[in-house]
Image (cartoon, rainbow, N blue to C red; front, side, top):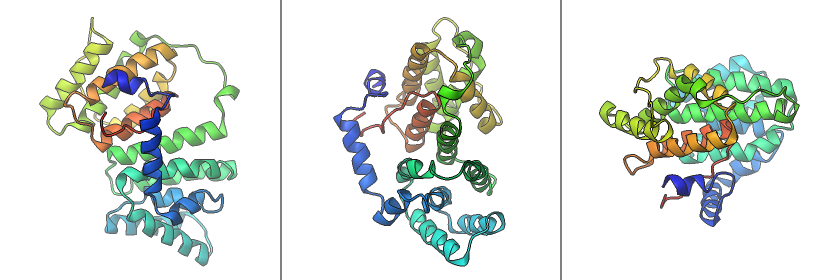
Length: 274
């Protein structure tokens, strides 16, 4: 499994392309059309991140009314899209965001910056952020950051060594292990398997961060400074952690995709037989 997944990074095969196309075809046509529209793309993103839990979604929409100024018909349009998003399968939320990104990039920069802040507020409104919610928010920030400040226009940063990012690596693998296992013993086993693959001489101890949201965000930002070959080795070891129990949960799969996007190593959707 690890090598087959690594082979798809930046080079999707027929199975991955077919899985991605099938996934997108399952998104309701009204949401797909809105996602391609620069006028509706912002509303589509908000629809994708709103909770499927009715009371939470009601609070989120009430929060939106206080944060954005829209004409009544525009807000009605947003609520209609949100209703469609609420019926969307969880596995389709990330693909819907990906459809919306090209149209979203046509919006003014100040709107994109405000959108990132607003999405973070919405996801944290109920006090708990799931792995899937984190994946949505992180992917949005990565994509919009690229749109606002392309990598080619940023100051060059020196590549970092893996040993200098031992703490960040430990955080990433611990969060991934917990994403796929409710049992601490099983999570520890998955963590150890990946760490032994990446750092066989001195694997770190399993110690999940208390504030995993901020710690993981900071870790991914720093890990992006690794050289490409080390990034590949890191992702291969991370797949070992994911596949340790021979099952890949939706949370693990989506978090892995977002990790790869954060490290600028795109990973296609994992096909079922992987």
